[in-house]
Image (tube, rainbow, N blue to C red; front, side, top):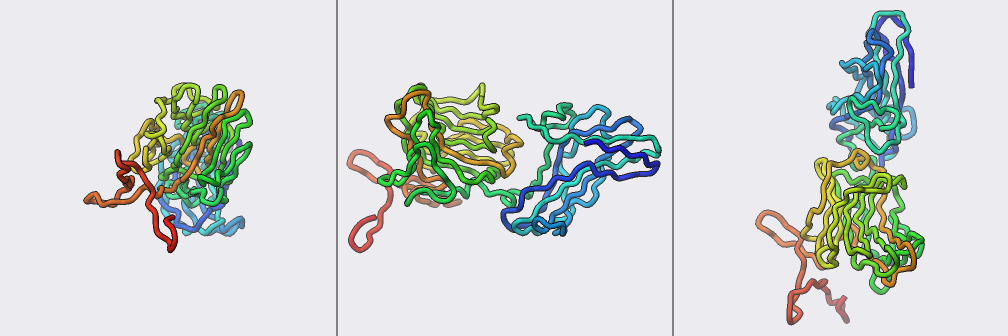
Length: 385
């Protein structure tokens, strides 16, 4: 987007307006805002600096709920060659109490501080679809996407992944749908995911989840067997079907678990280890303080980190979907994979006081030869359940 100005006095010019998805819940938006986008000016005499105005609208109306950043003016001139530029973080001088359905509006432009009537042009680049976010000084402004990030917007415009809870007690709940041969195992009360060439799976019905400051875990009760080059992507987290996602994947033919950060459906250097159905019964994704973790646990109480990276920019927004998938190049699985207790601590875990806090620990009983994990039961008039 390029707009020219010819005024001999300081002039403000709007280059573009961006509107957020609707807020999912009420809350107070405050904290910091940061942004990077591609920008340029036509000559060094243009003296153009960023101009930004950010506010919240009442639902889909033009009514203003409140202003977050009022007519901010930057101090660094746009470059002659288009490159990424912005701010690492500006404290919002005002907070706004949002209601569900409200939207954030970000208006970006330039202030021309030259004193010439000569035509001067400012440019803002947007719409890049590359896998790498634009950074300050980067000239890949037509491919790497620009971005705006609010530090205090977590869980207001998306649902934390930790809230995706399903024990599959009576089937699958409203948060999931299964497809291509996946089914609910009524006997064991969990979801069975075959591994076939039809790409069966269990998929979240919503694409508005966010893992920033949250976690997402599940019990992988059983892995599939059979098939040719069979894989079972026991947990996948990504924005849309664009080949960018995080995954914990089991490959039947090798017996390996892979902890994957895929771009273009591929990760050249995944972390791998030999799969143990006991040690790796639970899988978890977790994000905290700018770091993303792949973890496993034998009991959902003690977790081991197998891989961690700086949280990618795409993972910080509420556009994620979670799924559990199976696949086989040919043939079908003799035994399906089974998934249970999504973000739900099992009944085999109790909490004990460690001197400073209540911490989850597995409940174990003596079976005559060893201590084994067992679910507690209660008496109800005529039977234990």
